[in-house]
Length: 348
Image (cartoon, rainbow, N blue to C red):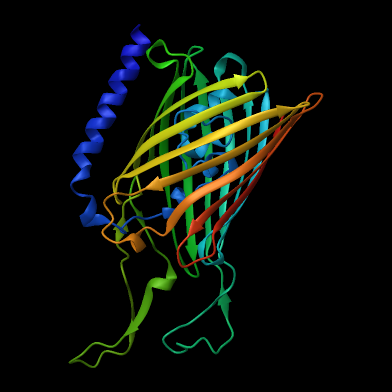
């Protein structure tokens, strides 16, 4: 009873926080730092539009709700994910997690962006005819901990170290995620609740020798000197997400899940996500079909939200002491080629 009261209290506080930040959203759209924290990973949850706050589990759950790490199917899990993002940006993700007995579950994850080679332009060479190139380096390393308090309640947290480097300037910072999942909400079997607070941390500011410029003082005889531009600091894209899920089975070999979630972003507009999954088990192999969509009601122009519906499929096989899962997801996108994600998970 005390645990249920605690869960409801946390949900009420997060709802109040969402309402408080709601009216300031339109004034700060597009002013976030480290927006790579928002880029999704994993084929399963992404295929359902990211609506899986309540039932995401394992290594993949660390991005969506770290409490899901408390639901590892085996003693350890390894995951690799590759995504083709907008403008030919590649997103690679890897993670390993393991059960640590009564202490809980621990995981280490790494997300890296590949921008390719970009022509280097300067004041002296604005067209980049010098043939020089640079490649930004964006890396996020996360350390996660989760634990199942009871058969119904799981909690988790992630500490993320953020590093961004663009030529001769760079920025670094830290962010923290918190999450909780509750299975059997209201005593209803299959009804799940999830709450996550993500990307809480100090502002990011760029610094480095690339910010030095040459200048000549006016009205004097001082020679040309170097001066440094102070980069502005920007907030992280903090989120408050609340999700519900309900699932069941048709027969012994068929299962289904329907998800819904609400996202309040301190530097963007509110977002609603819905998605679902249908699974069939055939001779020891599970096959899944998935679909989802994210809706942003407050956008003034349909073109302001370039992302559309998602869909995907998955295959899971459990052998002697090892399980293999392969998931694929696709998201329609305006102006760019669609986003594609393929992920592989190994369970032990």
